[in-house]
Length: 137
Length: 137
DNA sequence: TTTAAATAATACATATAAGTAGTATTTAAA
DNA sequence: TTTAAATACTACTTATATGTATTATTTAAA
Ligand code: FES
Ligand code: FES
Image (cartoon, rainbow over all chains, first blue to last red; front, side, top):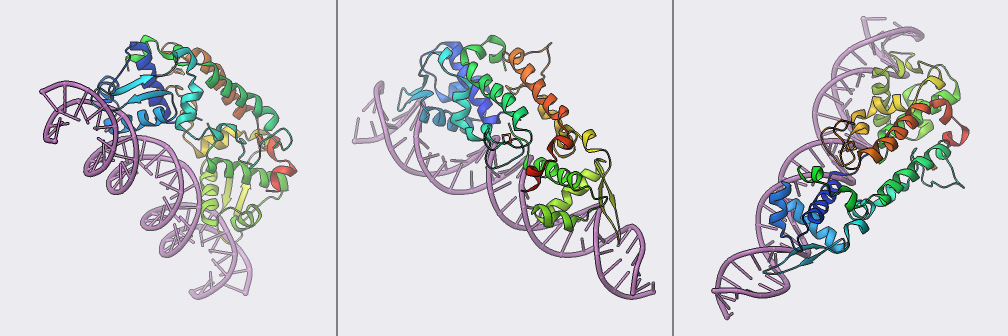
C-alpha cells in the first residue's frame, strides 16, 4: 500500500523544480541537488517529459522545465505517468472485476476508502508539496 | 497500494477453511479446492501456522486447522503474518520518519486515510469474507 | 565543420516478490 | 520395523521493480 520509489522520486524532483522557480534545469543540476542516482533520475525525467508533465529541451543549452503551474500538477498525474494506475482501482481481494455490479465480500467497505485514496492523489498538487521541508531531503 | 498476492492467497485459504467447517484439512485438499500452486500454498500454510493463525499437525493423519473463531481472525492478522506490516505505517512521500511531530507536507491529509485503511484491515475478519461467492473462485 | 554539453534510447545488473522442485522430518498404520 | 502420508525446510527459478552503464542523437558555440 505504498507509492513506488520511482513515483516518489518523480514527485520530489518536480517539487524541487517548482520550488526553486528556475525556468530550466539540467539533469546534472537536479542529480546534484537531490542526490538521486544519475542515470536513474535522467530516465525518470525522460519518462515525465514523455508524459508532458515536464518538457525537455535537447542539445547544448538543453534541460528540463515544468510545463504547467504547480497547482495544476496533481500527485495523481505524476503517479499515473510512472506506475500502472489501474492497480489503484483493483479489487482488494484480487478478483478480476471490481464494480458495484460484481462486488466481492469487502467491496462495499473497501470502495469508499479506495475512492478517498484516489481523491487524495487527485486533490493534492505540487503546490501542496513544494514546501521548504520537502526540499531539504 | 495493493495487498500482496501472497497475502490474498492466505486470506483465501483461511476463508475456505472457515467456510467449510471441517476440523482438519490436508494441504493437498486445499490445493485441489483453491487451485493454487502446490508448493507455494504449502509454504503459505507453514508461514500461517508459524504465526499461529492456523495450527499444523504433522505426520500420517496430519493437516491444518484454524485456531480461533473466524470472527476473531482479522485481515490485518493475516497480512501482518505474510508481509512486513511496517510499510503500512510509512510516510506517503517516503520520508524516514512519519509522525505528527515530524510531518511531511502531506502528512495531515494522508494520516487519516492511512488510519482508515489500517482500520479497514483490523475491522474486517474472516467471518466477513467467508461467503459463498468468495469460495467459488 | 568540429567539438562540447546536453537529452534519448537501449541494454545490462541487482534486489525483492512470486512461484517451483527436491529433500528431510514426523507420525502412525501395516 | 518398514512404509505411506503428511508437514517442514532449503534451494532454485522466474518476473518485476530498481538501479547502472553504454551508446546515439541533438544543438549551438568555437
Ligand atoms: S470487488 Fe473486491 S473490492 Fe471491489
Ligand atoms: S510524514 Fe509523510 S505521511 Fe506522515
